[in-house]
Image 1 (cartoon, rainbow, N blue to C red):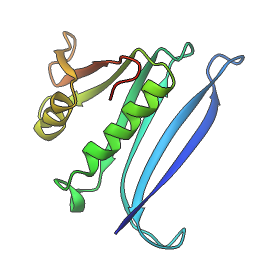
Image 2: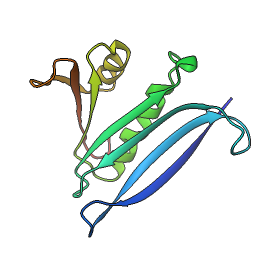
Image 3: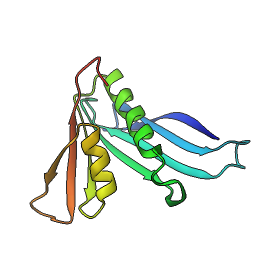
Length: 130
């Protein structure tokens, strides 16, 4: 049994503007402070809130159970609802599980000329679709 805790954090981008930073944390069910961490995803937006870079972590004990996909689907939906045009993230070239997940979610995968060990996943967002 799992519960999800959504949080929105504000931070200064240029000293003048702020950007909402969504963070979704997945834990086991229980009282705050007594639960086990299962996974988290966040989306760091640029100042214009046109592009977001995702970060995701799923604990190895629950890997392969679809939690990563659910977390990514939630952060993609959040980005669409805020009008982002693109979401991207850097993935180690050897992380086949994450690369496969991103492909299933519609991301394109690009090589990075300056670092062959890291690939870039990009998803162009269209308003009103998931």
